[in-house]
Image (cartoon, rainbow, N blue to C red; front, side):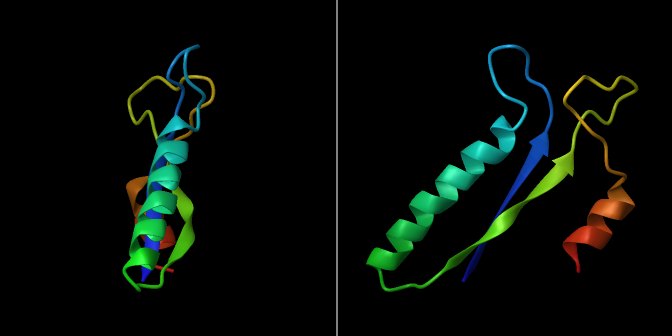
Length: 77
């Protein structure tokens, strides 16, 4: 089984790092992998896919935008 986390790289303000939306799913997947292992299910964690955030007209420092057609292309490789 392949576990794949998705997250947006975007600025949340001074209280959270830009990678928060990637760090949290990554930790969750590590915990899920441990639970699966106790049930005899082998799994691997694929590197997270970083989605582009801030699709509005304003780009905040620490964020980036990826056009939807590019994201689809990257995820289907």
